[in-house]
Image 1 (cartoon, rainbow, N blue to C red):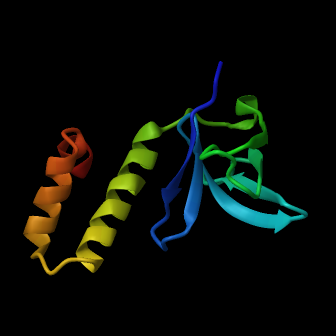
Image 2: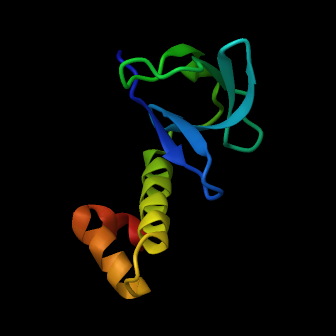
Length: 116
């Protein structure tokens, strides 16, 4: 099975790693390798990537889905992505908050499902 791997913004604007619906927080970087830990409290799952993104792809070194004590939650990644879009648009425009929300919702037909 091919993994779906991408970055989503955290609430503090840093990258989180999403692998098949599991979210990971940055842990440390060493010798060109980046180490990630699962965002879920109490979960000991870890992942590793190479520091550089190659041809637009994140290179996964390791991740074992069996290490998670919980099911994946793709909606968390979706919410984080929408939150990041809202923050970016609000920061870079003079639109009112209602217009920003409407425009971000309009860009993505599924946004209303995640917004409320």
